[in-house]
Image (cartoon, rainbow over all chains, first blue to last red; front, top):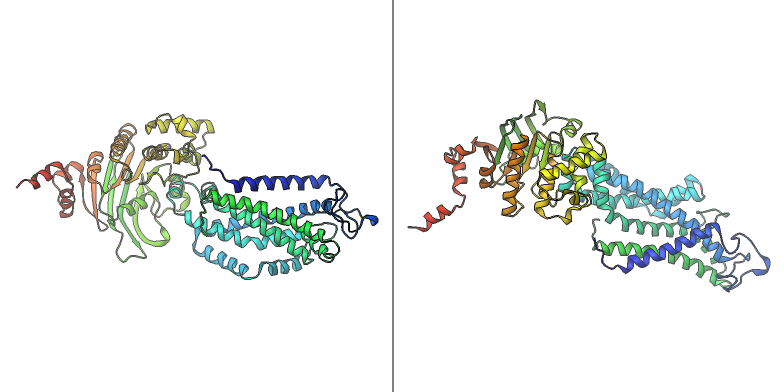
Length: 271
Length: 265
């Protein structure tokens, strides 16, 4: 299949790959120890020594940003993974089988979407306790309904397609039809949803850490750093600006992928 | 080998029975043509035979016996064992009947994958053989292609290959030539006839095209409003239709001679 030039997709993939490589690198090596404090280098502006300056403890913001972005990325990826796997399972069963299962599960879904997602995550965190993995779990659960809804409508649209009927007539079981025949065909709907979900997860993690219910101190995440930066916005504006830029870049590049995928699909929508 | 006994199907959303007591039999190696206009119940009958009846949306009664095995009330597990193995189905629209994201070869071999424990390699050769029998040229090259790369006629041949790959006893053909142009139609009919002759596969051929039925079928059954109005060897029904509906159907076929007669005073 010849793919027409799609600069959104290409730029998105390139930028994302670049960021991922940097973040991965930051996991093993950072210019400075992200936790090392230095009394003599407090609140320095960006310079060649400290690309993004230093914070009130003299820690290198670039190093901390790299490590923090890693944490944010991990949380976002895991959140999307949990949300997508569960959401696809729910959406596939409800969309394909319909009937009573559909009614019950989708009303549960509606009930979950009825709460503001941040509030729901807050409730879950207060039940589970805080920390990196608890945040992942809480956000993952909160993200299930959106994936379930997208998947359900895509499955429902293809359920009675002739090639699904003929697969059934070959004697294929439900599981095979759901995941071997249907799933590849709804991937084009699902992929943009995944990129949007990823972006929402990055933002959700940032907001939760900003509110102080996300990751806990030894870990740094972008949201956590942003809440740190807020208190010194006047004395060290580069802290907030730098951290914010990293978040924006991350979302922007993945958003480009999503946009590119949707353009390639000719903006096909099922929802 | 196939026996339909007093089949009734009534959809909840309709007041009239879609099928109101149809009894039919197909013997080994026979091609039965089931004709009738839209809504006559022929497709519903075919659905019931192939196991596609939406059971939750209709009332149904009667019996469908394939070599003694009851299919109409059979559970999913039993049905799955028979579908694709003993019964092959070919639909009207080959374009939509194939999974757009699955290679032709894999689709043709699906029934083998599900019903036999042949190795990957053996399956490959069976698929090639079936494709050759369906008169697809260069099956090795077609194996790895996707449906959008094939023409309608080739896809319908691939569908037929998929239906015969596991050597079924019965082929249900639901208007398999309607979506194709006339020359391809003729080729497909020749192919079906050859398969029937060489392998003795029985066929239930659903169509509203009487000419096609006359060319292919040994016996013909005519349905109207859910009931069977006439049944018999094709030649007999053709030359001496008993039921007025059949007479009208046959009279409705445009032929060169008739047009001539009409034009002449």
